[in-house]
Image (cartoon, rainbow, N blue to C red):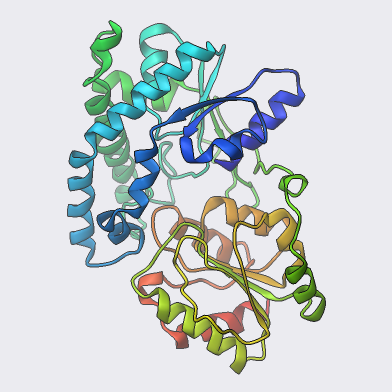
Length: 379
């Protein structure tokens, strides 16, 4: 949500009236920027708690089994996807925006642009998904890297996945609004050739390819001043006074197959390396015992623009937001990728000389983590 909230904050400061259409769970967050909020169904975000979804996000099971699970979910969650489209149209009808800035997961803006000439723009927080990059494969298409495969991987992503999903779900509801069904070629052409795109990422990590079309821009990472809405607890400030510049470890909304083992390893390494650590247990990727050594402190729901200037380095899952927040404060990073674009940021961070190459969370061991933390602390 963060790049959209940050952009909304910027546009509001310019005098625009801003509204947000997001999962209902983010209502209080959206209200930090605007009084206009239009909810999407709660069921969408609740999918993260589904055991089958956790197999994908946690890299649990074989790659083939996770692919089968993904396609099963695409079928079984059709009703949720259709409700999302209806929620997005309801927001458009109620707010009547002159422009819609949308995420690639939102299908309605594409439908509205193609069928009612709505002014839309795509804000995409990750590269290597829509617009081809010659020396990198599309996200989710393996770790191979040679020109023919790279080119073919974007064809698969744009044609077989994004366009097909958008058409499949969109055409199931589009006649409700009196619009003609979508066609594959027009959707693909719209995404690649027509819709203006902003990538809110850093060119220090991903320089803009010169061969990209002119309507595709890299605008730099956007992050709000979240400190204005947050007061640090006294226990945290006391810990940082005793242990200045600790290591931060957190995996955001990601989970894994062995959260208790991950938590146990982190605590043991804190003691063995005499290293103060701030641990963000967040959505369950790290589970800890009730009693912790004094050099370990647990945080949750903490603004990175307050925290990261106070740590020595950052160990995380490799989400675009966390990667760029740590980059903003020039902190060395170690990424343990779980899914999707996290593998890409892992490579780009290492290529930029910001941290060691991390290992996938499914290959976690205390020994691997110790080796990589020691490497990280030398940066």
